[in-house]
Image (tube, rainbow, N blue to C red; front, side, top):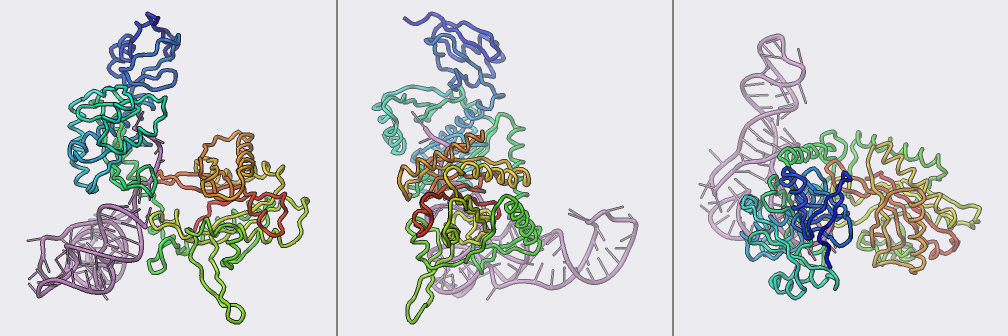
Amino acid sequence: MPAAEIQVTLPDGSEKRLAAGSTGADLARAIGPGLAKAALAVRVDGQVLDLARPLPGDMGSVRVAILTDKDPQALDVLRHSSAHVLATAVRQLFPHAKIGFGPPIDDGFYYDFDIPTPFSPEDLEKIEAKMREVAQADYPFVREEVTREEAKRRFADDPLKLERIDDLGPDEVISIYTDGPFVDLCRGPHVPSTGRIKHFKLLHAAGAYWRGDERRQMLQRIYGTAWFTKDDLEAYLRRLEEAKKRDHRLLGRQLDLFSIQEDVGPGLIFWHPKGAMLQFQLRRFIEDTILARGYQLVYTPNVTREELFLRSGHLPLYAANQFPPMAAGEGESETVRYRVKPMNCPMHILIYAAQQRSYRDLPLRLAEIANVYRNERSGTLHGMLRVRGLTMDDAHIFVRPDQIEAEIFQLLDIVELVLGQTFGLSYRLDLATRPDKKLGADATWDQAERALEEALKHRGATYRIDQGGGAFYGPKIDVKFNDAIGREWQGATIQLDFEQPESSPSASGSSTRGRTTGPTAR
RNA sequence: GCCACCGUAGCUCAGUGGUAGAGCUCUCGAUUCGUAAUCGAGCGGUCGUCGGUUCAAGUCCGACCGGUGGCUCCA
């Protein structure tokens, strides 16, 4: 027996009674005509829903907020709806385009299309013009719930959507949204109609693998941005312009700090005198910082017999990122393969293992500001922020299990001192857990992941879980920050490794290795 | 690596297959009240590289090198 009335509690604590089956729009109207006009969506017990959805009436009083353009959550809704308008326009101009995903993102939205010929800049202009027509037409966003069979029938010509439908769990509600001529499989919510979307701009097109998987087909992605007011849109576009002026690649040239020479190769940095002085000062600062915290400096070779990286487990799993081997003659006729080092771990472990160690020696903190070379994929290179040759502030700490937490605390302190206090960067912590390609037993991973998470929790740090983002030898805490253009980069990383000490000939089985990489980049 | 776009003077960029250009910088000169940009002149280019098409290629085609944006912030 459904209740004849539903009771809602508004954000200001007041309560309202509505007839059963009333929608968010009904509630807004009941509160006032101004709000009814400004309303975009509702938030019911924390969940954002379409204005046209009936409010749930079967669980007593619900907390309901009417979302307007004042609410940041409403901006996501607007952008999600903008993505649908984009797809609506593309389908009008390119009826054969198959649709992928079209979510809201920070500062905007995108939509992926499977289309034989990629979009040209002129296409984007036409699409944006068509989007304005779609917005002007003020099509309502109509939601319906369908069965799995019905959904498959409706999207029979859209293989990407069919794949998505197959991935939906048996209990999930399948909803589709229609705006004018366009129908999309979509979770929602959306603004009431396309007319609410007024201030937007398409930014650029780019290739993007279906589901981010490079083994799958390449789709054509269109990025755009959308805002509630013209001022917001213009301010955003201005911000992009300003950010361009602060691009380190531009400043590097203007201030004569560094260059990259085609004769030498991509991702390899030449530090000019002024830039080198900056690096010199930074190194001194880092060295002072870590020496004061019980780290000991070491220096190790830049090349090594390949054997070392075989033993450490790097080669099978990391070879794609290492430069190919070079040969050197040794002895009478023998040729031995050498590798440039991409990281220092095996080297530092050799120093640790060079003599008998007692648990009394722990923690042993070995640090090196080292040049390493990695064969990064050409498409990922970017100025000084993604390179093939870099100088890393790298340390390996050999610890007993009961010392792990204290060391992680100190590492996070160093991160805060350098990134936060010294450079004023706001950064984020990610706990990256075991990847598919990995060494070691699950029990070891359980232990390592738990140790990192405990340290984060005890410190009261906020962090996110990066599922499967760990290194092949252990989980890690990644420190990420944004550059002047708003792009995100990985700075420091704190990693736990139970494996390499074990596979190393004389390292103690009870020791564990922590490792940190600082922000010194080259 | 993959997709798109781009590569012309030190920098920013124009340049329907037919004799390589502009602004800024720089050098010199003039002028001045000219507060880094007043006026004039000059310097500066195998048009990324290699090959092809053509009577003729910066322009069209191919390969390569390099750069820019992007490659799950999941229906």
